[in-house]
Image (cartoon, rainbow, N blue to C red; front, side, top):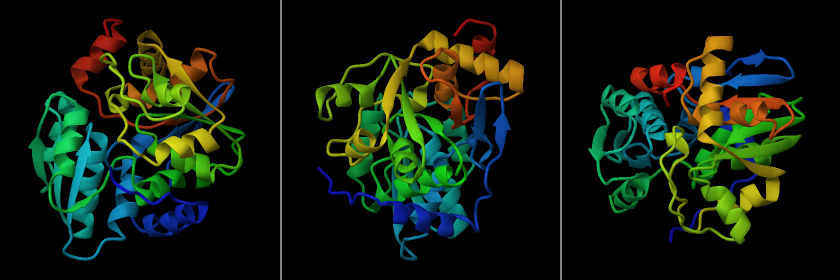
Length: 297
């Protein structure tokens, strides 16, 4: 089990200073009783680039970076490594989204496809030499993700998708208002941990929110951060996720992946009463998006 230092609110503020030269604030789109924070407009198509830049800007020149990813974090680390001059190895499972794998291939990072799911990819990445940059269980990654909240100073409620819990942890640390997390009912890893009072390994089902699929690293600091700083964690069904993807495309003209639509799914299903929904990513294949838009999943 790795020992990871827990971040603080001061770490989020420091991460914002390091990120500022590399990433512009993302827009806020007003809706009817809700707002959308458009993190899918980041240069790699997801919020993950905030954490990657926050982590890599603290490295020593010449260090090698290793990351495991369901896709978006790998894209983010590859982008940040190229921008900041680091060599990087990205490990993804064979079941990762083809759109995300192809995105990683556009960068000079070494791509390793290993295992049948994220859990196996993560275990392999942890065995490699280099500075391991977790997509969620990392002080700097959490702090970088939390900078989203600093761009929402007046938000009374922020609704955020949860996989490993990095984004929710960072926003929970930095937000002035209430924070509600959202997990897919098909793989509710963080909800299961909260119910058990500790991190537990579960056997979930496939989900259109592939970025939220997978168990949480044993000992992850995100569990206590989510437990201590979030008001609630709710679940959304596959139908609710797909409804949110269609709604975002047809009502707002936004291409959003399943994980990216989770906050909107919770708001539309009445599981959260409005607020600012974090739209976390856009990296979905055209074929999957077409099936969802056509109602076919």
